[in-house]
Amino acid sequence: MNNLVQIFSNGASAWYLLLGAAFLGGVIASVSPCSLAMLPLIIGYVGGYSKETPLRTFVQLCFFIFGTAIVFSVIGILCAVTGSVFASAFGGYFTLLMASLLLVMGLKLLDILDFELPVIVKSMPVNNGSSLILYPTLLGITFALAGTPCSTPILAGIMAFAAMGKNLTFAVLLLFMFALGQGVILIVAGLFTSGVKNLKSIAAFTEGLLKFSGLLLVLVSLYLYWKVFSPLI
Image 1 (tube, helix red, strand yellow):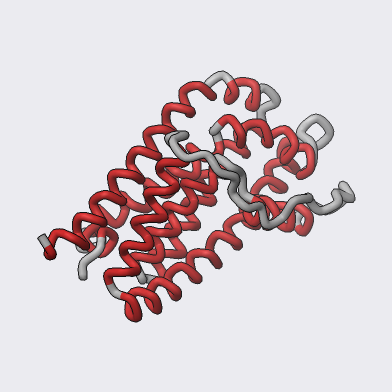
Image 2 (cartoon, one colour):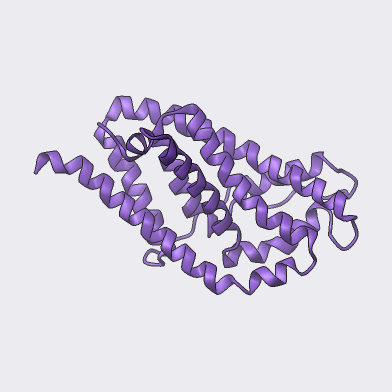
């Protein structure tokens, strides 16, 4: 059965559209209110923009993003592999499972459903203040595994697309673009001391973007339900 990702993948322009949407999802997740609250803590742990030179801070933040990209790329691989296995074994039931995941996460972003999302890592590595590469990378890995209440629904939606696509390259690129999207705002806030303050001023606007993202996830889930059940009507 053709699913949504396979339909999109028939054209190169639509394939790029999904990658762009994943990047935008990372940006939206990073400027959501709960993510913005973590920015000063992350920047301080990475190196501290008040004590480090801009170049050193930039390098550390790049390796932080590299750490998150490692985790998300591995997640992309797992999504593609498991998606191929489950789609082959369960067919339409797998599509229904993914549609249900998208629906739940969409309703979460719309604040219709309220539940706590699990956190894998609850504490950050100890900062020895001397590592330019290793510590920021480990911190990026930790941050990616921990996630935030605001980014997890968007990330789960992207993971669902990666799994339904059943294409290894597409899945890795999809999650990698999400990681890059998250990193853009972090670098801006890290290099400019007023960055966090300025970003907080658009928190109300990003709240609306989160709602819009939730609505899109709900609409996509309804479309997938329709693709499954329409032949039976």
